[in-house]
Amino acid sequence: MHRIDVQALRQGQRRALAKAITLVESHNPEHRPAADALLAEIMPWTGQAFRLGISGVPGVGKSTFIESFGLRAIEQGQKIAVLAVDPSSPVNGGSILGDKTRMEQLSRTEGAYIRPSPAGDSLGGVAQRTREAILLCEAAGYDQIWIETVGVGQSEHEVANMTDAFMVLMQPGAGDELQGIKKGILELADLIVVNKADGEAKQLAEFSRRHYQNALNLLTHNGFWSPEVLSVSALKTDGLEALEGLLQQYRLAGAKEIPAKRTRQNLSWFERLVKDQLWQQAIHGTLREDWLRQREAVLQGQVSPVTAAQAVFKPT
Image (cartoon, rainbow, N blue to C red; front, side, top):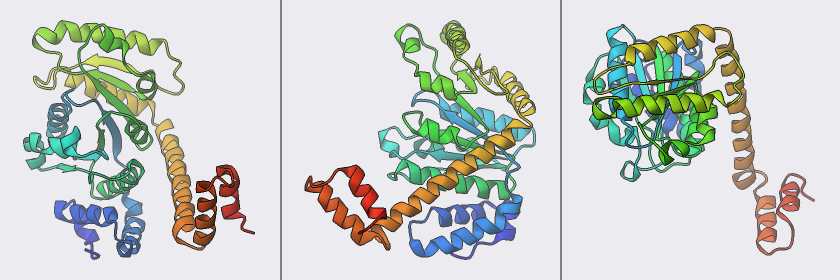
């Protein structure tokens, strides 16, 4: 497991990429030095892909959308890697973890790579390994890296903070369903895509599209891009060409801003890693005795959590 063929990885061999991601995902502390060395070695070949976040609640048709949109991109000569950020189990409504089997055509297509994250981990841990997997996929020559999330809670913010653009899939809806859209999603989204715009739902999808666009217009958006809303039918592949056009416009408009956005994301990632290292030092390293002493004092109600936390790093 420690020996990763970097040349095979650079040639885009799926087996080498899978082994590399498995290495960086490993919980075994003995594997971490090899994972760190691998990431350092492949860094010169990273950063060239377009990173797209895709979110949407279960039932919105994400797997159908990703397969249709992915196959279209591959037909145009692109290589697509699809990664999942999902700490839940596939049984409890997970995303790609359960959907991979429903994207059989895409998973078998040359030029596509689908990788689910391991279930049951803390979101922060999954997100960190997904960031590392992005770098490995870029080194393997993939042109687009799609990061998919189940679309509930903190996962949306995690994905938005590791991608160049963030897309939210919505179902055609009316009344309370439309009113219930979270403001936080609107603030994160660069694109809102109303899926399943076909058959009897086509008119409802157009109504939903106008409603979401009006809602977006009420928000103040800073930066180079005003979020757009469009309706598509992934099943019938209607509207996918227009979506491609919007993403191309986004990339052109953000030619200067996207690199700056990535720099901010890298700084945020770095700061989180430093905090994680401090936490590990507190509970496992040189500060462990002080941490245990102050933890017990908090449990006994002898000191406030604020005082105890400060005392860990300023032992008497």
